[in-house]
Length: 70
Image (cartoon, rainbow, N blue to C red):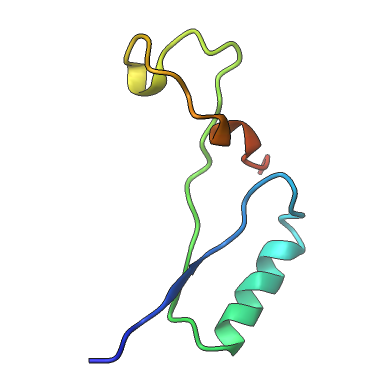
């Protein structure tokens, strides 16, 4: 059985989602990646009065602050 490779697409604010994500997806397809992965948009509450997953005192990871707006 051959190894299949997938690639996670960039979705952070430093990217132009309308240009960079399709460019990366096309390049990945051209070089033979089997799948492309994205994550659901994670919203960072402002203010973060509720803990992560609704668990009191569980802090929100800073990475959630850097997800691009749709």
